[in-house]
Image (cartoon, rainbow, N blue to C red):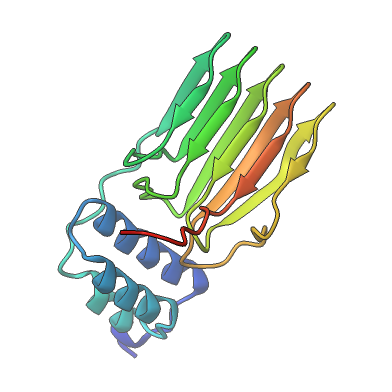
Length: 184
């Protein structure tokens, strides 16, 4: 049996999906192309099926230590709009809060690790529609953690945000973007 006809694993499918998402983040694929190829990648049965989806894309760059650290003593840490989300993000704030809006950000990684170290502030995270957020490793002493209708179980093909760390006198709120009723 040739290698092209060998069956693929879930890990092989996930690697191909990561490569497609990275190509989309670089502007090499349109959103419809990404959606079509992701659907095929996640249902691929053989290596030949997967290779047909990525052969026109450049080889992935070697992984870099993609960690960004943001720190504030008394102000808020805010990110929104069109910004590049790193693979690992560490945010520390003594007296301020954190407001991260990932809904329009460029996120080339299928898994993003976020570590929060908040003393007197809270964090609000807005994730893209369909994203999944795991907050099991986040602790708060005097606040609460609210995730509403955002699921926590990992699913292939969508952003999986893993939030860890601590808020001593604050909490964490995770949500999808608000729906706008009237847009022009």
